Every structure is written in C-alpha cells, then in structure tokens.
Length: 380
Image (cartoon, rainbow, N blue to C red; front, side, top):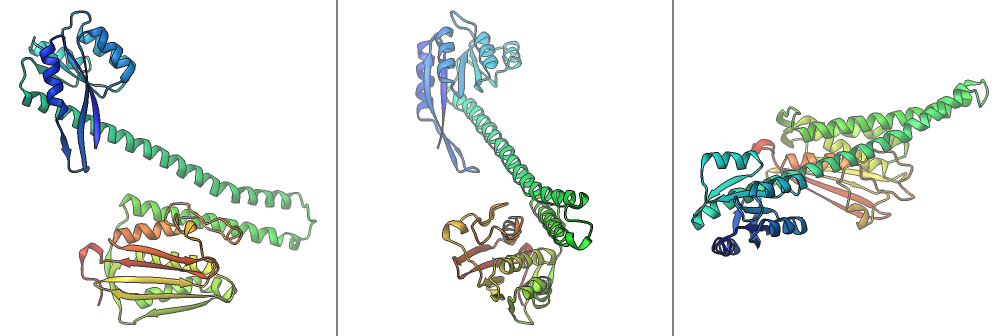
C-alpha cells in the first residue's frame, strides 16, 4: 500500500475537520499496478502554520484555501514551488470563478475545488491528484533506475574493453621498440595474445548487438518450422575446433524428425551460447552432451557438461548482464558475461523457463524449456 500525506489548509474549522474525516478512510485502488493508495492527514488554520508544516514535513498533497487570514494561498503555493518539494496542490476557495481557477493553475496548482463541495467532489478531485502523483513518482523512479542501469552498463563495458586494449597496446609498444630483438619469431606469442584479445572484443560486440536487438524489439522475427537436428549439428560444428583442442567429447541427442516453430537466428544464438559455455568451462578430456526433446507442445533444450561447476552462490547471478563467476579456475577463461543473459531473454520471448543445476568440481546442466513462437503449433 502507498500512503500519501495530505496537508489540509483552511481557516474554517468545519472545512478542515470535514475534509480530514473524508480522507481518513478514503482508498484508491490501482489494479494495473497492484497498488492501493491511502492518506494520512494534517491540518493548518493559517498560512504561517501551513508554511511551517510544508518546510518540516513536506507532504505529498496540499489542499490549500485560496484566501487565508494572514498569508494569501497563492503566496504559499509560490513558496512551495520555489522550495521544489514536489507537493501537488489543489486550490480551495469560496470565490469560485474562471479567473480565480486560471490564476491558480497558472501559478502551479494541479486542480481547483470550489466551496462548498460535496464529499464526492472532494474524493474525485483527490483521486485525480493522487493518481497523477503516483504515476509521476513511478515515472521518476523508472527514469532513475534507467540512469543507474545505463551507468552500470557503460562502466562494465568500459572495463571489459579497457583491459584488452591496454594489453594490445603494450604488446604493440614492445614490438615497436624491438624489445625482444629484430627476429619476428620473438614476437609470435605477443601477436597470438593480441589476436586472442581482439577475438574477445569481437565476441563482446556480437553479444551486445544480439542483446540490444532482442531487448529493443526491433529485430525482425521470422518463425518457421525448423529441423532441430540439422540446426543443433551446425551449432556443434562451431565449437568442435575448441573442443577437440582440449579433448572434450561432444554428443547430441535429438530425433531426426523433431521440428520446432521458431526464429532460426534466436534458436541458433541460444544453443550456441549454451555449447560455448559448456566447452570453455569444461575440463580437458571432459564431455558436453546436448539434448533436444519435445516438452508438451514446446521444446526442451538441455546442455550438460563435466566442467568446473559452480557453487549455489555463484549460480545465483548467472542470468545478469556482464555477470561472470570469478574464482581461481575461471580467471583465465575469456568471455563477455552476456551469454546466459541473452539466453534468458530468448527463453522469455518464447514464454519459457530456464534452470541451472551445478556442482563445483563436477559439472553444470542448463535446461531451457521454450513454448511455441507467437502461439503457433511448434513440435511435430
């Protein structure tokens, strides 16, 4: 429940007490947000008292009499606006006229309520003001969260690019200064390391493009009925070179007749990311087993490896962007930290679910269940 504080300022005791009594039990339901708004109230009989309460307590909503005995309501409104305390003001007056209403709203009042008013008129006006205030605060919160996400994203991205660029620069300066002599062979290892760093940055750029295309919704989706066996075999071929260099055995369990209605590019990205992680975090001489099977009218994709595994604490953040498990066994393993976050977003596109089981030192299993794209029939 959200509780807005309301300050009722009026020189007539009956008006103050009546408005306070009405708002005490007033509730506003916002089903779209799963929220209920209630009110806590304070009252003031003079402008001076109101100014002191505005400064000390900064209420959310101000019900302000236009004409007070000591300070004009517009002066209080102007003072509140200058203080930038985000109070939403409803001006109340017995001098109801178009000129007064225009003057009040021009000076920053949200709405205008003429005396004498009924309880229904009061609650309708307060409802509009409270809903406006709630949505405004919600938008401000979302904007602040977006700024924080952008800041974190840029900070991590800068860090991920700064390290390999610095390494390449150092290698180039060593070669430019002929520190190891004039023989080209003396610099072969530096060239290899530089190329490896460049490959890592290229993979980061590809992952970022995949991520932004998926998140933006601008990537054109073209679901068709796909043969999963051939798609999985192609994905295995892409990691076979690295797997063979470390004697990691690859196996595939997928019926030749199995098909799924999906966007080919999305499923390629999903399977490739799972296989890439399974190979690079494996032990030499280990195994990677990929299995694609029907799951009701959807698809179950399971990738099991015999790699270094993870603790339960390490698996908790796996689907966050730029998240990488950091320990002695992973410090030399390259990666962008985006692979599984991309997998999770693709799974979400298909209304599916994903789970990870891992035991440190024994291996990891990732299971993704996808429903059919656009609600169409998927498996056959």
